[in-house]
Length: 182
Image 1 (cartoon, rainbow, N blue to C red):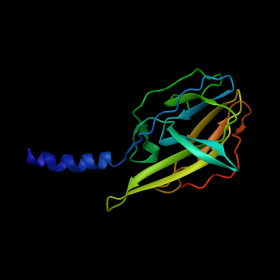
Image 2: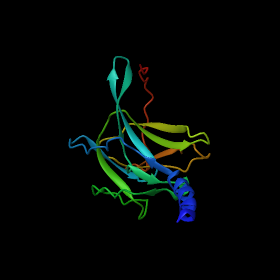
Image 3: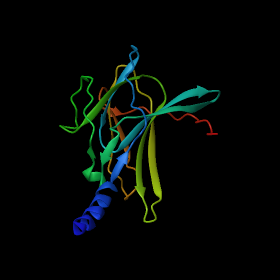
Image 4: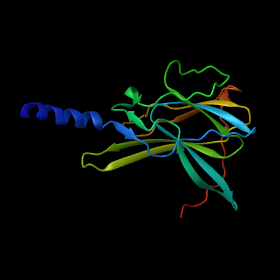
């Protein structure tokens, strides 16, 4: 029995080292008439960051997860979400094929950011967090698809792609001053 645990422990350590857990609350669907819809490929850790105007700058108010809470991802190309699909019946067919997606209704015309996070451990057991984000202003009655590309370097966060399915262009960005974090 002892020789089985000699092989089991390293196998489990290798297997679990590629897991990512996201404890943030999920995005809740918006019910107002001034809405937009987003479809997110359920791979990696993508979050939606909300901002509010505070004087002459915009302050981050909340961050919610867009993807499932738990991912098995030894390699970014082998990412496997353990969550389920979330569909709201968007008009435009998905370009993601039969991959898992999450669809949300969000408030339009507000400054947001989509953030991709990749967490890994170094050889000393320290967690290293890499993030990449892109600003985004959803337009009323538009539908968007969002995903993170595979990272260019091991451990880095991949570029985020936002496609406006209504106009077939990339999403509208905002270049406004963010408030300093306290």
